[in-house]
Length: 226
Image 1 (cartoon, rainbow, N blue to C red):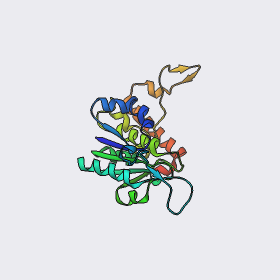
Image 2 (image 1 turned 45 degrees about the vertical axis):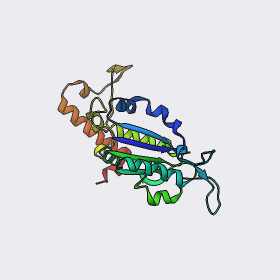
Image 3 (image 1 turned 45 degrees about the horizontal axis):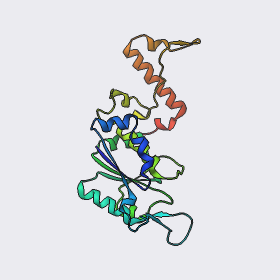
Image 4 (image 1 turned 90 degrees about the vertical axis):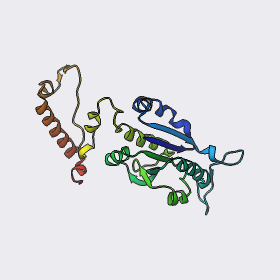
């Protein structure tokens, strides 16, 4: 899988891309993540990528020209399955979406900033708009990192135990069950006996029941989804 991230603030992604699971995925050659500095596609000495909105109003808008140049250059090199724009008014990101995107080969993620991008970018280039929640952050870089992490960990071979991703919250519309580790007794607070029994079938049954009960209590809306 290849993910190209387009941003005006590439340094914001440096730490994220060089840590933990995302770094290991790249080192294994399972995922290639390339960050493109939007200013490399800008014109003029100032390498300007934003301007005032037509019609007036507060804030700045990312210009169409550098974005179009970057996307077209990438499209000339390979086919992209989705061109994703991170925006508060996009589709809310969820596990099913992450699952689908993890099966694709090439993705572009465009990070919005300021008041967003010239709307013509959304009309003529973007194929999928994603929001990570009903709130506004300073730019799409953190949102792009969230989406990238959720996708990458699902790519086969990335996790050392591939069953781990299958037992995460939101798989099968259920929250994950409680988890415990050593010591089995901490100041009288004990781990449920069933988890110490070694009986795999009964443990699996207990975990499923716990998932259902936690989901019903905390996120009943998930149980109503198809």
